[in-house]
Image (cartoon, rainbow, N blue to C red; front, side, top):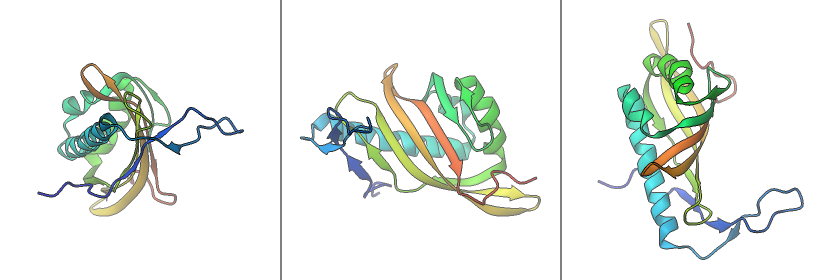
Amino acid sequence: MAPRYPRCLIIAGSIKDATPSGLPSWKPATREANVDDAVARATKWLRLWERQINEGDYQGARDLFSPNVLSFGTIAPEMKGLEQLESRQWRIVWPAIRDFSFGEPAILAPSAGSDVVVIASWNSLGRDGRQWYARRGRCTLVLREEAGGLRCIHSHFSMEPGIDPLRD
């Protein structure tokens, strides 16, 4: 079976130099094998979480997140900690959707041992009474090596403008 994200955008660079605005300047750097490993692990993490969302596997998903995760969501504007993320976002949204999938991600791995940023679009179907409607949006995830595996320390999900997060 071919990899699910065979053409993901991979950016490996250095943030040693900042622009006048103070933002990091992503300059190409010599890629290390560890950077490639980080990208592969982040892609695997994303596929696993996608499956857990579709299966409603809250416990499995909890294992992918830091207990201190900070999040913004489509339903809850701000969540501090895994308990809030699960109760105020996941447990409201996941039962009301189906066919969740991530688009082709951009994975930013500035250097070996650093946090990995995943940027992706996503799609699902939401229930509108008796009908299903298309839900589209985008997300940013920050993954960090923590407790023996990659854990999400920040997630930000938003809907594409003009689409209701969930309809009654």
